[in-house]
Length: 137
Picture (cartoon, helix red, strand yellow):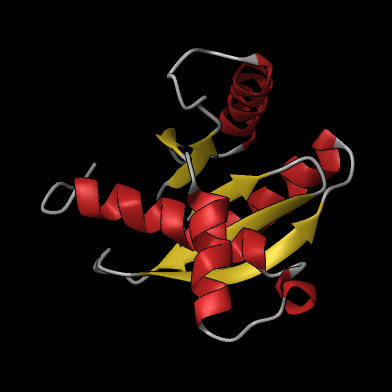
């Protein structure tokens, strides 16, 4: 399972059982962290996810910033809440790429709202899958 965690929404994507392709699943509107963690745990269990890949907001220079530190705290809480491994993956430009793909597909900016996050999650997950092709970890 792949996640694009933002301040207002969490995009969720899944991969096929062979870990070849990532597909957008849904977008969760953010609530309190505890409620978000509970809903993510339910999704992991419902879909039988064996791992969660969380997009990590890394600055273009690679320097750690406040968003990355905040995400590290969320990822630690998520790892405590789940019974599967949680890993982070560089999410640089994933939302911009999702918006570009949606525009190329004819989606208006208005139609992108509430959808772009799950597309970004699928881009993050696909990048992770591609980088780990042939590995089981």
